[in-house]
Image (cartoon, rainbow, N blue to C red; front, side, top):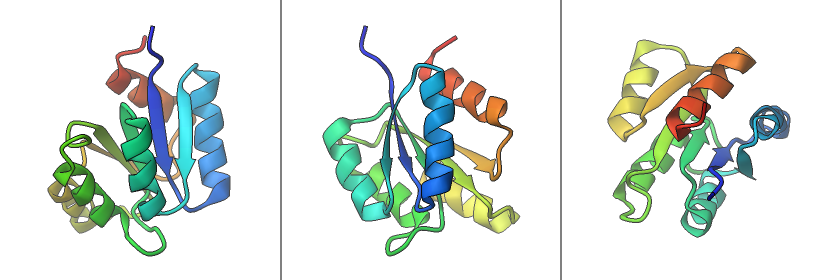
Length: 124
């Protein structure tokens, strides 16, 4: 069986490591990128099933990354879950306008994040 892959685009090494550990303990393969540009390159090469995307990234922000994912024919159907400390309605609406599938506020309840990711990946 082809294992499900998740790409985490997160500039905080600590946050990225926490997310990676949570998902890997659930048997989910995880790749990490520290910038939007690196994330887009990795997404094209590994074709993840789901992308966990921070909004506040150096260089290209998460909104721009999400728009570029949606414009890319090979990636446009990839699920994108925003994971951000931003919790204003405007930030959340802008994320959905950019093409996000879901929005989770940091810090997430670990079990909640894992269950959401598993749900999106079709894993029980």
